[in-house]
Length: 182
Image 1 (cartoon, helix red, strand yellow):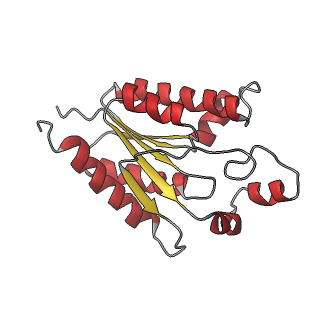
Image 2: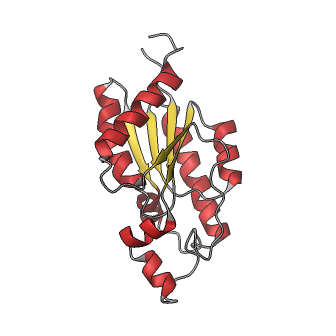
């Protein structure tokens, strides 16, 4: 049996394409005969429904640790876990590197003006109208990963999520599984 314990952690600001790309990545990994599962930050937040975990720094950090621990538990069951979440702080990036099996970090970089144009959740518009606060990249300072395994410039709206998923899959499989016995 192939050891496929790994966590592919896709991070970036709201609107950078994390969930869209992660959703395209999971079936691609399965085509490579890997057991794969998606943990989306918003979906986990909705399922847990913890009103004490807000969107300020401490709430976001608590949620990121919750997702990381779930990812570790699932990965230990011989699964590649694809995580799509903002994870805005170096504490979580460092913890992930130390604690998650086969950790592969992907940073999606998108200019703020493009994120504001995309704005799929209306967060940036709400923040600019003073109807929302703690928006990462605006009034909530962010700490992007210091040394991601893969950085993707996703400024171009023409980038195809399947092409980006293929790029992540190829890079992650090469980095994580090329030295493991098949």
